[in-house]
Length: 336
Picture 1 (cartoon, rainbow, N blue to C red):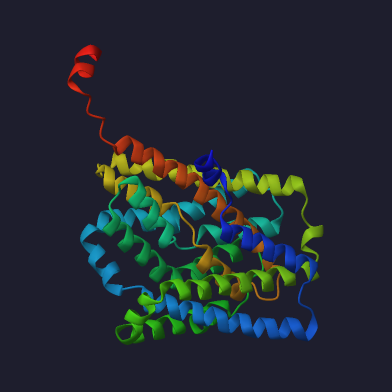
Picture 2 (spheres, rainbow, N blue to C red; picture 1 turned 90 degrees about the horizontal axis):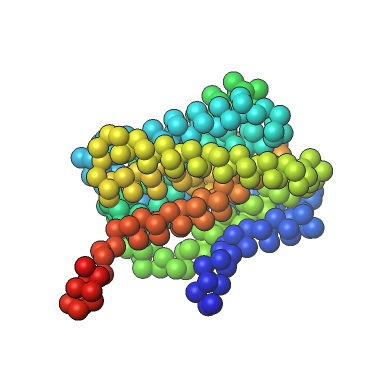
């Protein structure tokens, strides 16, 4: 019973995110307080990407070039297949979601993969962990540049609002701190690694601050008056369809191209993730002045759905990889 309860217990960080949304809905930041919170949030985002820079080893992505077929497929799934499927869903069901939610789904589709959960699920499932590290690192390094460019292209062509100088803001507020972290990594990387637990609170605290700021703006702009339970249910359905299509597609394609089972596992888990940690700060910059809370809602729901689905899938892969139990002599004879 205890293990059963643990399996279905909600993730504490997801609960913290939901609690932050609820707090912002009841006590949103207004006026001068909103201005101060905005400045603090920008500083927190810079610190967040500085820490990313100190922890991501460029050598991990460079070493992965030896397995270029695997990484090409992961990047294609992340930055090509995801947006194509999102646009197709919007074409087939345009009235299912509001324009703001469709904009959020398209933004979600161009985000890079996660690092921690991609590696963790690959390890649980018995996949190629070194390749997963390389693929996830490369996705995040590339995503800092390609995500805002793809978002600008797709959201502009779809008729959604987009800040003209947002790409430049991304370079200043995200890429420069990240580059500074990379430059200082040889000197402070060891200290960062040895204080991973403490700095994890900085990471998560920064994200919670971004969520509070985004939903404070959304509440003042009437975000909850634009949504109802039917819309939320439709959003969950679209997220599930998007994830299921990518999971099935990466699995079938990796087998069709002759990848080994460990490599297939890596492709499936690295190619199907979207990073909440990168997405929320980017959204706060790209969609400044708009209802950011509404735009990041698809990403927040997708994040939880992908964790649940991939946890189940990883256990199935692990069970299939487990060797059959060796039977005792008399039992083996009896069963034969």
